[in-house]
Amino acid sequence: MTLTVTDLTIARGGIPVLQGVNLVLRPGAALVLRGSNGIGKTTLLRTLAGLQPPVCGTIRGADETIAYAGHFDGIKPTLTVSENLTFWASVFGANGIQPALDAFDLQQLAMRPAGSLSAGQKRRLALSRLLVTGRPIWVLDEPTVSLDVAAVSMFAAAVRAHLAGGGSALIATHIDLGLSAEVLDLGRFRAKTRPVADFDGDFL
Amino acid sequence: MIALLLRDLKLAFRAGGGFGLGLAFFLILTVLVPFSVGPQSSLLSSIAPGVLWLGALLACLLSLDRLLALDWEDGSLDLLATAPVPLESVVTIKALAHWLTTGLPLVLVAPLLGVLLNLPVAGFFWLVISLLLGTPALSVIGTFGAALTVGLKRGGLLLSLLVLPLYVPTLIFGAEVARRGAAGMETTTPLLMLAGITAAVIALLPFASAAVLRVNLR
Image (cartoon, rainbow over all chains, first blue to last red; front, side, top):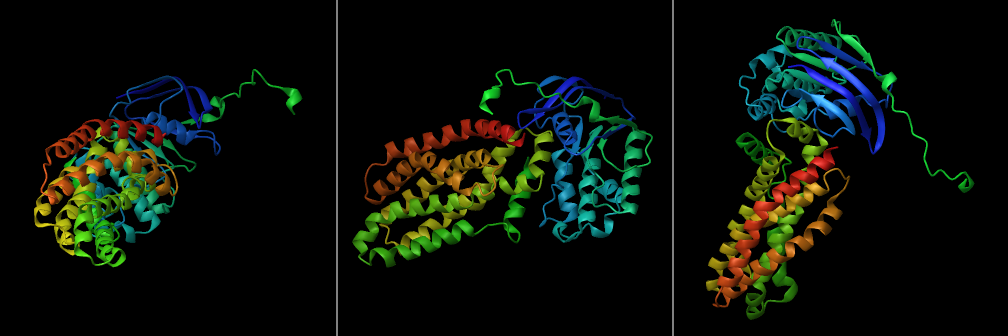
């Protein structure tokens, strides 16, 4: 499934942050988003995931194909690791959490309540959720936060396996994952602030 | 969807899930009423249906702010919104889980607490019937209120203010069924009104809840 974004303008809190965004994400490809803080990476990813409507422009190929992982892990502390994963697996209609546990080295932790995990372990659990969704396009917002070096390479391996299986990934990150990915700098799409039409200089 | 229901029930019964909060409040209220209004059994038995209904309503209200707020805070709501489950059914299941963990236990203990308030014998049946018909409406309306206030920090105050007027018709007709039943009068009219309110609310409000949730997730 190819994700095609044409001439997209997105806004946060009613103020346009990015405009004229064009990107194409083909199966097997990864695209890394770069840009300074506040440029609109999260807003762009949330728009692509369908959590907010774009101001204008079109997004094709995003219906029921995107697995989104944002800043928050979406983990219930009183459920065990395997209960958390099993829940998402059944919501997405996939079965078998074993590959996901294996990919992020969570077998030892499977019976632990998720609330007792460390921040990095929680992050691994949140990322392993991507595998049980069975969705082809991964949209990831700063996925490596609080991961150690070993876990980052675990994550990179999971992404590589996903790409090899015909999936694709759109990742907002500042660290080098060692993927052969295109890099898209969002700086050039920064929305221009329009001059206010009825600006009253005398008011100042 | 079954998975979501089971997860919510599991979360409610595990430590810190808030199951029993409403029940404890209901128990405290009805135990304290005879102390505050005095022990005259004739007075107690005449106010018993109203007090039990009010207690059940406030107990329901107490647990509403956790209904969607917890899922919002940990990001589960974002993930559910991107899952292949329509938000309408997510909010319906959430309301059902809330009713099973809050409304249904209230219905079951209400007859026991009726004894404390000297509820007339004829009233027990109608109390249970009216609560059984009315509490689902409380959960569904409450889910709507929770969806309206989901992004707000400490939205509990606003939630109560928004939901209370919507609860009034259910309270009026529910308490009326229980009162008329206890007095041995005809109950058909308020019972039909109560059933009508509950049916309408279940049919319509999940769409409204899902719509406001979509706006609040932006």
